[in-house]
Image (spheres, rainbow, N blue to C red):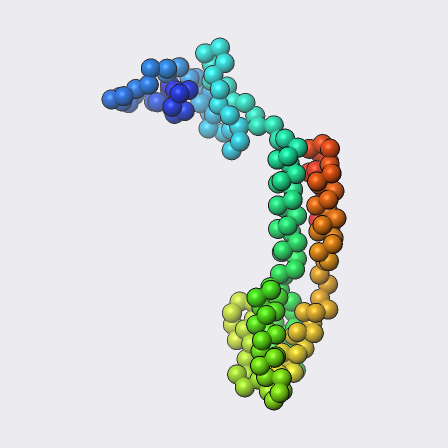
Length: 179
């Protein structure tokens, strides 16, 4: 096997190429296997004519950015987690509680507040399947259940992000976790 540092590609010995790079180096089976098994951020470098995998070293800035992204994702997962609700008729199902789902529920309540009736008679569960019968009182109950659901305050997220942001080592940044 051969490798071209300028092109960054491997060239099997048993194939011919019309425009082979001139900087090809010989690569052992072990070097090729190590190159194929390297991490996504690891680098391939040529040192003293040998192909070497250089492991990526996480910087503090990278660790902080990755952890903040992870914390934001965890927060979104918690606040958007479905909620269980049982209708007056006894149907128990999980319902979406994303910002969009809450807005749709608020719109339905507002549009029918005067009559206190829900003429459609159904609401969709988290999988998009109809739950019926579903009354106006059920809409109110679902909205109330969403309002009192145990969701973390945004301040909790900001506190954790602040811990990450003020961390002075990669290990300290990576050790911050969503409870």
